[in-house]
Length: 474
Ligand SMILES: [Zn+2]
Image (tube, protein in one colour):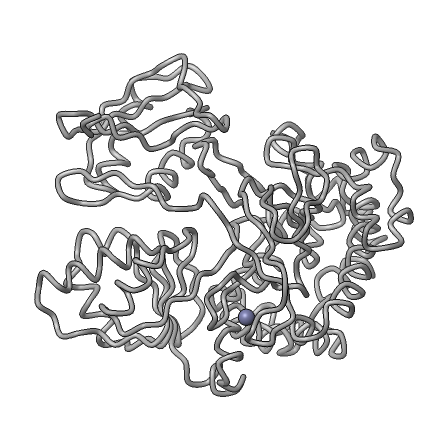
């Protein structure tokens, strides 16, 4: 895998100092724009469209100049950024996806005006079990996750004289913007609210934030309950299956009810029954949130709980049919997202792989931002020995062996054991097998049998069923 070296771009870097600073501090330096950014989703759709077109044109122009992938793509299609003059002109642009991005060297996906140290690597496995490894720039990484280790925060704070710090707090509030819609003030949320995140990877955000590893919910549920009771979060974010698991444990142990006012469910759409279950167990109101590892947060529910309002200031969301034509509101199709903030690794008309629809009409809550419904994100899991192991936990391990594993499938066999079927990316040694087994053992307390195969069947939609339960009676 080739990657631009710092040396190679050092002269270019100097030439593009203005551009660089613009890319780094695009959002924080311009206060008027920042103010507008914060309010776009509350303004009429016509204004949101105007904003999106302006941002899209800027994003396109800079991607065309700085990111070889987009230059080649647009040249091939015979489209120039200046050809996008109206909002509908977005349809002139090609739709991209993970598969297409995987095919090109990574050096062509990144903004060449940024130096090597500006990039981090993030992986997403998706439901196919094929990892997609993509770069994110540190500044964007910072924006996207709205938090970072203290030393990086200090570094950026020095550079931007506090602007980014303020923005981080702002962004924190805007991810959970339903709180603003509920009537809490910005100051109150950023000063008083406490957030807990149940997820595999820790993204530290400061003292108001608690990270609970997903594995702890399964392995040490009592400790998790104690931790949460002590921390008293106002908002807990996690996958609905994990939260239900936690609620079940609390029931089993007869623990005093844990009072959590708000839960945001990520990565999976919750069913009505699940929402009711959590409402009963925690006294919480559950809000669905939609986002992707590569794009960040895209939409969140309001208190009507009927579709998720799109973050119109940051993303353009389109629903298209199989011929890439837009469908009318209410009709289902593929969810295609353009991120307007990420200048380092732009995602322009990115096919998320999810199916969904835009709800027609206005939301009774009064927020004009369009509402998105996502289908087919009900979380998969395997139950082994009475414990639930979730899709992302397996996926994270498989992704960490992306140099060995081309495609894979985790199968639960009738004898209640786990088998990992692998189509290898290269010759696999005994040592590799041992390493994978040990990682499973360490992270999930499972010892899978690893077998190398030539084929893993696809399902009807062309995807590998990453988790397969062969133990269930048919
Ligand atoms: Zn609403």
